Structures are given as structure tokens and as C-alpha cells.
Length: 228
Image 1 (cartoon, rainbow, N blue to C red):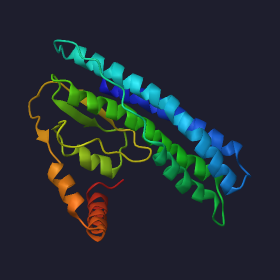
Image 2 (cartoon, rainbow, N blue to C red; image 1 turned 180 degrees about the vertical axis):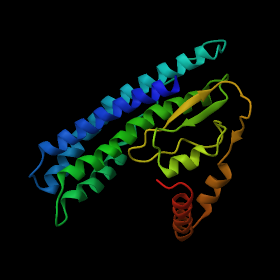
Image 3 (cartoon, rainbow, N blue to C red; image 1 turned 120 degrees about the vertical axis):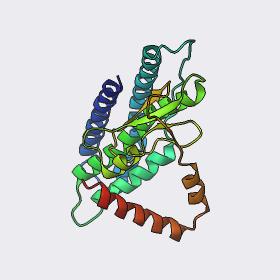
């Protein structure tokens, strides 16, 4: 069931990428300023449309998974909100950099922006599932389902194993990430609760220099232990 949900979300994000890329190519030849304003006007609407679809798929999946686990009682999950406009504004301004250099590439602009918008849509689905496990008294938490060919960062997170609870950590993702969350309603053999709260707290207390140093160490660790 988890793989079927993941496949449905993946199909949805393929549509997101195609629509964003088509929009970008329709603006080919325009100045960066014109392209930026057009994307700021139209991209949030694309994300909103597919975000609604992602939330609906996640809500259906949660209810089916709950029923399959024979959980008593009724629970109706709520859709998670789409990311705020500021997130898309930042992504658009970053992606438009693809057409401001010596070799402008509208193709790269479409790919980069499509990846960012796809991530926002997938986040709606995963947030819907994670929020549901936090609100449902019968849920234990959620686990990470890797996409086929997952990157080193996602494989590292998955290797932590176990079940993430509502009190520990949010679902971590990146542009073009198609990993997903699966609700868990009972502790299976070998399951354990995973907590990253101490890490999150320590991050808040770090200086910017310390955060950059930790990020570089994390990148080196991933590259050494989870090569692509």
C-alpha cells in the first residue's frame, strides 16, 4: 500500500514538472524580469492545484492504511497547507538565475523550478500524513519509505530505521525528492522510536559558522558512506 501511494505521488509530481517546464518554455526569449514576474504570478496557482491533489491522495492513503491495520474507531485526517508564497518567491528568484548568466538556459530554469515546486507538492502529502499520526490517538507515528534509487541523504535518514513519533522530527526532503511517509499503528518486531530532538535543539544554539561547519561534515559523511 505504501508503494502504491508513493507511485501515485510520483505520477503527480511528473505532471507538476511537465506543467512548470511548459510554462517556462512558453516564456523563452523574454527578459529575466518579465519571466520572473510571470512565474511569480502563475506558479503558486500550479502548486495550489497539485497540492490539493497530493493532500487528497495522502488522506485516502491514511484512511486505507488505518482500515488495513484494523484500527478501531474513526479518524478523518485533515489536509496540510501548501507552503507560503514566500517559499515560491525564493525558489523563483533562485531559478531565474539560470537565464541571467553568459549561457542562459530556459531548460535548466524549468528543471530547477519544477524540482522546487514538486518538492512543495510532495511536502503537502507527507505533512498531511505526519500531522495525521500526531492527531490520531491510535497512531504510533510514521516511517520513511525510500524512493527507488534514493540519494545518499535520504538513505542516511532511512538507515536510522524505526518509527518517528509526533514529538520528535518532521519529514526531511529536498528538491525532486520522492520519498514518502507511511503511517504506523502498531509496534512491530524490532521497531524502535527514533528521536532527533537533541539534534534540532543543538542546531538552534549554533552560530552560523558552526552550522556551516556541521553541514560540511554531514556532506562529507554522506559522500563517504552513501555514494550515488
